Amino acid sequence: MITRIQNATCVFPEQTLVANVLIRDGKLELDPAVHAPADEIIDATGLHLLPGLVDDQVHFRDPGLTHKEDLHTGSRACAAGGVTTFLEMPNTNPTTTSVEALHQKLELAKSKSIVNYGFYIGATCENLEELKNATRTPGIKIFIGSSTGNLLVDDQDALERIFAETTLPICAHCEDEATVRKNREILQGGKTHADHSRIRDHEAAVVATKRAMDLSLRYRHQFHILHVSTAEECDLLYAYQAGLSQFSDRLITSEVCPHHLFFNVDDYERLGSLVQMNPSIKTRHDNDRLWRGLNELTIDVIATDHAPHTLEEKQQPYPQSPSGLPAVENSLALMLNAVNEGRILLERVVDAMSAAPARIWHLANKGGLIHNYDADLVLVDMNLKKTIRNADQQTKSKWSPWDGAELTGWPVKTWCGGKLVYDGQQVDENHRGREVTFTNH
Image (cartoon, rainbow, N blue to C red; front, side, top):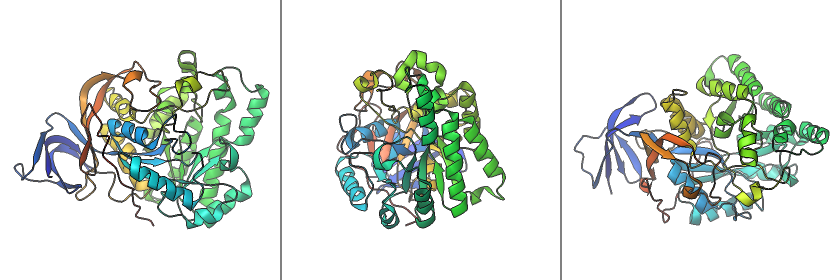
């Protein structure tokens, strides 16, 4: 079937303008004639057409923790939120720390995921050969602190070998384990949710980020800093970029999550464990610096770190309450609302949520309204007002820390591989996305 989307305000890589596009055989065709033959015509007058989002950091809990989320429900939330490709983290049960486990997860997604998918392989202190042999993955995930069991890699010799002897891009959760343990001991484990930000403080994030950046630069290894949460990390990244002869020379890239942009320690009183995250939320000053870093291109990507738990789990007293929150179906609306408030340009949102993650992780034919790219698209209404409600959430966890927030600007249609997977009301539960491919291996 050929679909013509006409009169849409299209956010192309170099310009934004009203245009017509065709979807043919799952691919995008640009600049068709107004009356180009089509089986279906969609009049998108007054609406914006964006490339489908690439969320490069989600936790869909499958296998092993599927009472919180699974690949089907998580991908359903993606479709409703305009996310057409996700890259999922290895801390499932069992962990994705071998090539065999990676391939098993890919097979699982083939039967369950509504949108396109990829999976990181997780680093341990003992699985160097698996990391060296892995393909069909965007890269290696390292937990430098803030994990349990064999996924915690804070041994310097192990980190040196991973950066020195592997070739895949590396990303890391950067919180210094020694600092976290010291703070936890001082606070006797912590008694309130606000203590979480005192235990996982600025120093924990900055020490680990410096450590990882040093490894990347010494070994000339591509490295991506996940969920930057502090002003100090923005300053480190700014100084690093200022020292480069040209922007394209960068080995080190980074991302920010909506919860670190929109929440700070003042929100614990209102939301408690619902905003308990690793890395922790920080201060209003950090919010402001993260926004500036995002607008100035110091930070490359917006990703969600979608990490759902049941409300019953989250409502446990601290420190039994787990860290993490669901965000994948609301992230685009949150950023479109910020566009309407004048906090960021729409083109910057598109770059940070689609083009940049596709570029950083070397995704083939993703991340832009480009001729012959995959027809992964999201049509948004910048004037549509809706309120986030727990009961309406597609995620299995059925809650959001933004419950009750009225936002202006929402996705109204999502296409994945040229197929309509969200029509503004319903998700096509029967569609299956595809495993992403990578241009670097």
